[in-house]
Image (cartoon, rainbow, N blue to C red; front, top):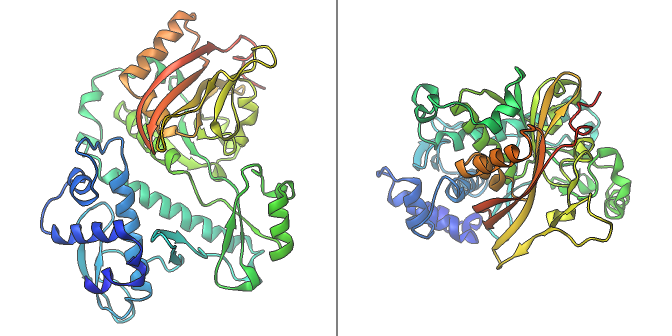
Length: 430
């Protein structure tokens, strides 16, 4: 333990060092997520694990940082500290002479990690082909598959921390009928798919070295349009042609997808979760779709967004009403109440798609977790249903929701504008 705490990898990771020590001192106790948050991480006593993922995030970072330590400074040790996926309990495991872990977690040989100056763990050269083989599609697919596996394991560890559902369903919800709002999305006999955006990044290995440089410009959302960004174009001149990379999803979108999947599953509605990179339109046109994202990451659904009269502005700072006269003031701006607390605007819209009769629910904003929390709450579903009733029960609509958040943690949301889709807009596109 002393060797780990005094290592260079943990030198600047003050919070993770304290968390590691707390878990070690309580390794024989059945500590809860709440106890870790309050006693181990110093969170306030009003901490609520259902809406605050701090513990899960910090445990995941600590797990990866330990793995990084044993890949480098601590590689000589045959007894190692690990935190198995799905638990908070720290364990000691024995390592075979060839580096294989007898029990607990194995490190991913395809992922190399480094510690930045803040002590956080960041990817570095994650399963990139050597310069000679960068054009090989099969080797690039391997990197994508590894990233998907890592994402799925992260999702699994989060789900395992949720209380077990009786018989695979939430017994409190099984006797209840699916709320009307969600029925409008799912009652057409189609499968329902939740799609997480995977924005376009560009990656270089300068001078063929071992380190990898990854960059993103929010204005570039197609791999063929790198030249649209002067900064990316300049990097291409300096470092050569990059590899397009779509291995990341946003934390808010990921937690929103998990929350929605669990909510629908409690009513017996099965869902599929995939990334935008693996969800071609020719397949999902025959499924109901829930798409999360921001103005830059939802560009694949621009034709659907163009059907709306409300529009989310750049960097999610405001919502405007396109039906208002030109030059009208911004209708719903972001309100920065303090350094961490803000009220941020978001859009939700349910639209019909294609002649197949499928539907799409667009959830657009910087805080999609807050939007889904609202849409799956009794208050949120009641407000939306009442608004539908006041406008003639048209199941297809667009709405503006303001969400108050503290950091990444939702506090409350409210419906501030609602508009049923006009008849021509609610006709499925052909």
